[in-house]
Amino acid sequence: MKICLISSPLLDTPPKGYGGLERVVWDLACGLSKLGHEVDLVATVGSKHPPSGRLIPTVKAAGRVHVDWFAYEAEAFNRYREELARGGYDIVHDHTWFMLPYNIPDIPLIHTHHSWLNGLQKPRDRPCLVGISKFHAMSLANHLFGTVWRWCYNPVNPDNYPFQGDKQDYLLFIGRIDKIKAPHYCVEIARRAGVKLVVAGGTFVQDMEYVRMVKHLCEKNGFPFMADVSEEKKVELMQNAACVLFTPAYPFMEPFGLVAVEAALCGTPVIAFYNGATPEVVYQGVSGYLVSDVDDAVQVLKAGALSEIKPSECRKWGEVFSPENIAAMYLKLYRAALENPW
Image 1 (cartoon, rainbow, N blue to C red):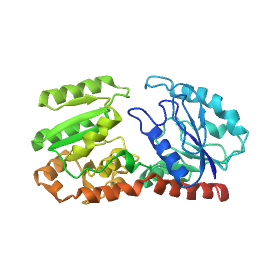
Image 2: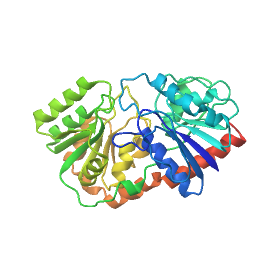
Image 3: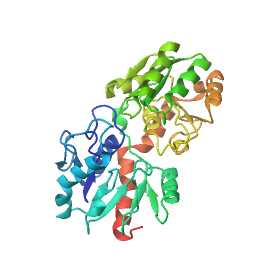
Image 4: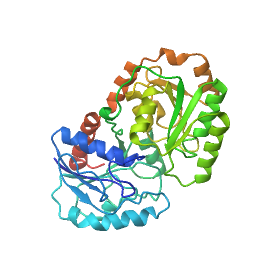
């Protein structure tokens, strides 16, 4: 197939540091290419050339949160809309936040949504909408009346997360320093369990006051706080950690949870809150433990349950989400979208 993947203009694809959606789009491009398909990539001018097709550059990456996201996507859309309108693609796979490619008539289009209802409305007449987990798809269908959603997991490239069986004695929070990811819960878990903690994460967030609060909590408890670490440092921290803590906080519901898969590939178990899709990305008792709250997490640590998790089994679980596996799942959705749109 000849496929066009459309990424977000907020960060480069793949991102040079923090970045979820853009890294997912890149890994999918690589997976589809390995399966023998021609893949063009619509992305920012600083993005990487895709493995088996062209880069269609749009705008310079915003690189920050405090921009008008819709206006920025609209500007990028105006740079590539004529390219899509000319046709020639078997399928166009949109990953933007606001689904502007649906404004182009008569193109074979499918959309994966990576968040919740941020400006989301039902496209006029040809949805073909995809969530990033079973939970996510079900929730979006319930909230956006009259829509049908399929689902497909995010790909994570095992080559980027080398396995390491030997671990050090610290817990790790890695991710956005954001209230919805709730690293302050990780500080409380580590403090009460009497275990070292490293907090490392991106400050591509709206609430910098929360970032300062988490930094203060870490300093107060003697825990290292690392802002905006490189991808190389992120992987090193995950490889060496005894456990990654993953604590998405209600009312936010986790649509997927990339860090749980990344940690598993490194051979590192995860302790995660039951929240949204976390039961789909954490294999209970194999790649880690699902817990209800801070108290449960502390109990798991104090009971020494992490010693029962085998790093090699974590790795096997993480490989389920390889780009080739996820690309094969998406190819089935592409064919369904072309033959019998939902």
